[in-house]
Image 1 (spheres, rainbow, N blue to C red):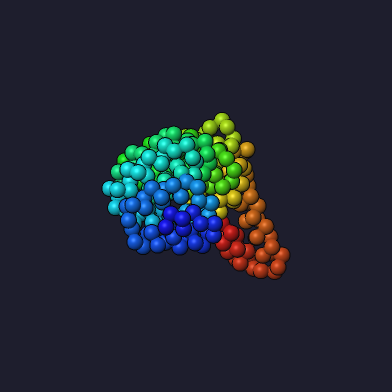
Image 2 (cartoon, helix red, strand yellow):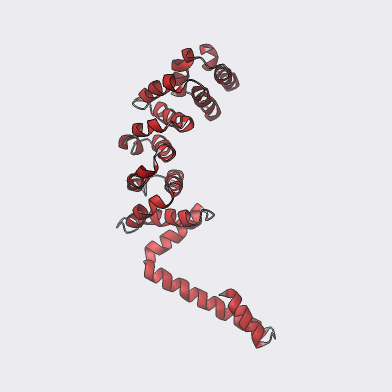
Length: 245
């Protein structure tokens, strides 16, 4: 089985991980974790984590915790991912500040997701305060992951985001504004939220609001004028203006 878990063919490795998970045996714990640290295929890694969740928590969790201190970034990341799948609230205390701020983006992203899953309600405001310290970090993928984590914290994230929105660093402020837009309306696309946030940061909240009001008035006037020019009665033009409002 150890040979199969490290076979050259990823489909063989996937089947091996499936077999181990289908017949859970604590004797495979070390082999599964060792493979997690080096496995290049996403689907195989996910199957390895699933196999670990099938083991008794009292056996698996202490050993998984050791991986959080590994020098190998993938070992830390995959251990965090597995903890999020197991969902044991006792593991919350293991999500340290060092992990949330890990220099490796993938480890940090996984730590954010796992922290949100495991955090008790009473700890969520403090977690939000810690997460906003990472606003403005990394590329689009990293920033989107952080925004999703903060959105998943719900209202607990609102005070921390409001404070971050006033940060003198425009990248941090824009990321905070975009995240708050997503929190209020999850249907808003991330890129659209970022564009709007950058506009607000560039203009300032008051000027942005004034620009929005001016644009709204212009749209109302154009709609009414179009209705009149088309020969519609004035009451239709007024109803058109009301519809725009």
